[in-house]
Length: 354
Ligand code: PLP
Image 1 (cartoon, rainbow, N blue to C red):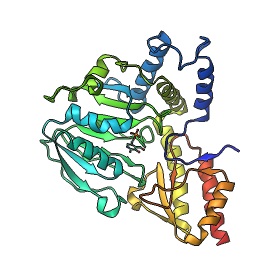
Image 2 (cartoon, helix red, strand yellow):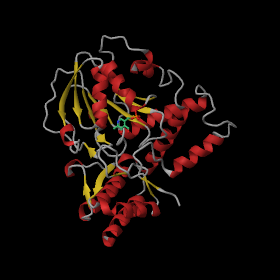
Image 3 (tube, rainbow, N blue to C red):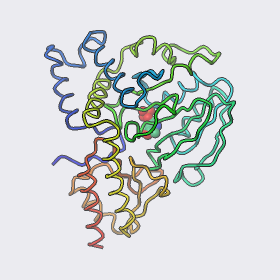
Image 4 (cartoon, helix red, strand yellow):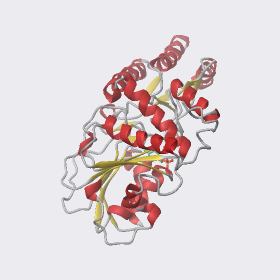
C-alpha cells in the first residue's frame, strides 16, 4: 500500500515527478548517463537550470518585472545570514512568528541591529502578530509567510516602502497572491518544489548592491546572478526535480489551480478538527495554515487506538513537532485530496468508537 505522506519535510513530490526523475537517474534523455552524472556545464544541464529558473518566475507572475531566480545551496537556513549580509546596512525589522523566524533574527543579529516589530512567542506562536508599524528608514522587513511548526500562515501582508523579504519555504507556489509585493523570496525546495538540497531565491535585482561590507562570493547574490546560478557546482538532482515539479504545476493550470485543491484539503481537514469533539486545533482560527494543520487529541486514553488506526490506514508522518506536541498534518501541493479524506475518515471513526 502506498502511504499517505503527511510529513512536514523533507518533501512530497507528485507521482509523475518521481517517475520521470527515477527514469532520468538511470538514463537522462537517452544520453547513456544519469542526470546526476552529466556535466553541469553540458547543454542538457544548462537547459534544465534555465528552464527551472524561468518556470519559477513565470508561475509566480514575476517574468519581466526585474526579478532573478536562483537555485542555491545551504537550505533556507543559509538565507537567514545571506539576506543580512546582502541587505543589512544599519537596521532591519523582523516579524517573530515562529521558530524559523526566530532563527532568522538570531543570524541577522550577528551582523547588525535587528528590531522585532512584533512577536507571538509568548503564546507559543499560535497566532500571527498584527497591527505593528514598520519604520520607513529600515533596510528591509523580514517575515515568514507560513510557520511550518505551528501551523499558522499570513493571510495578508503589510504595505511598506522598504524592501519586503520573506521566508516562503513551506507555502511557496501554494496560493495565488501578488508575488510582486515582495522584493526577495526564499524557499527551501524540499516542501513544494523538489528534492532537498537546493533553495529557490527570487530577488528583485534593484535592491542589491546597497551595503558597504565585502560579501564573500558564495554569499553574494550578485555573484550568483552574474553566473546564471552556476557559480559553483549546482545541486543537479534537486534542481532537476524542482524543474519537473514546476512543469507539473504549470500543466495542472498553475498556482490558481493548485490553490483550489489546497483550499479543498484544508477545508476538509479543519472542518473535521472543529466538528469532532475529540480534537482541538492549535492555531488561532483566522491564522490557520492551509499547508500544515496542527491539532491535539483531547483524550489521551485514545492515543494508542488512534495511532494504531493511523498505522493501519497508511497515514504517515502526522506526529506534531516537539514544541507543539499533538499532531500535524502537512498538506503540501503534491498531497492528494484522497489522503486528507483517508485521515479524516479515521478521525471520525475514532469518534464513533469513543
Ligand atoms: N524556514 C521554514 C519556514 C521552514 O519550514 C524550514 C524547515 O522546515 C526552514 C526555514 C529551514 O530550512 P532548511 O532546513 O532548508 O535550512
